[in-house]
Image (cartoon, rainbow, N blue to C red; front, side, top):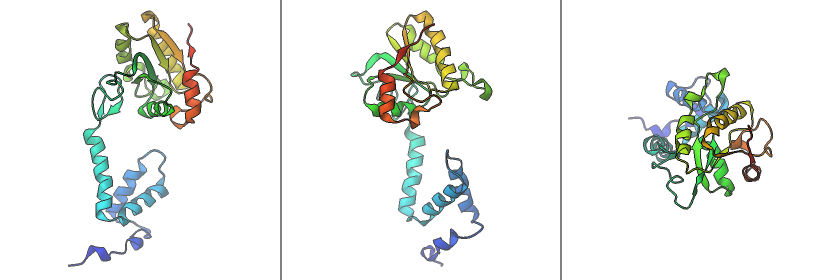
Length: 215
């Protein structure tokens, strides 16, 4: 029986045409954001060259993320438990909710160490051109959280671009009847920027220097 350990993996990764199994892996890597064809090929060849145990650690890590991670029923954060570790932390200020578009934005703000309130993840932004209307986001659940009167301030930390501004203005209008203070992160961040890619210090200043939204 042929021993797989004698397969020349370097030769496999220099072929003009990859075996179908390798092509399948390249195709999956290529679906990831920011991964082009060449990078996908390099990643596939990297996995191919790894010892079986090391390669399987990657496979198990991906499996466990899909198996054990949950969406928080309160704020829509990604967590191993629901409510998540932020919503269930009694030392955090539950009277302030910071509204962000996605999980990565929450992480960016958390890294600043300057915010100690709760969050609400919209799971996107309003974009008529993309066919994304308010009903497809978690805005309704945000309004439910504010309705009981325990929330004193809602910080709108959507991205500082057209879609983020449209979303912020829409949410502000929906919150007006609740009498809650609504603020918007400061424009220390460049117009058109995305929170997840911003410098941590700049994000910290933008949250700390937030401005109250007016009618």
